Image (spheres, rainbow, N blue to C red):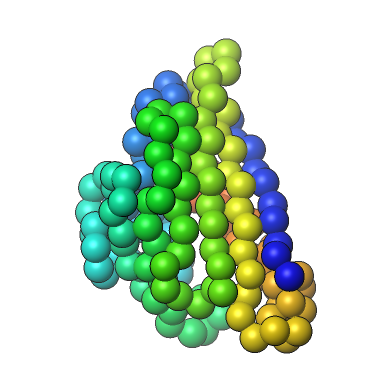
Length: 150
């Protein structure tokens, strides 16, 4: 069963700056320091572009995971999509939207994912993964906001 959620974050910075920061591998790594996340394959530093991949390694729930994501769609500086190619999810899709608002940018994250393991995965999605992923996205967005508003 697919889990979907959306998160909005206002950042007092221009759309182009927020867009570029959202594609920056180094910013992502810094925002996920608590999980020891690192880029270990593909684009491992700097800004990602359309069609490029990154392989992440991180520890979540006491387990070290690897996930390869690809930027599959891009409309600079309004929107991009990253999708899991390989990793722990049956499906992971993340749309990033950027819209100018008075004094800054409204950034919207739309996420859809399916856990593996059938019925057991469905239960895990609802009970644990949905809220855990929302927390991770909120942490990343807060990191971007703090750094871009300096």
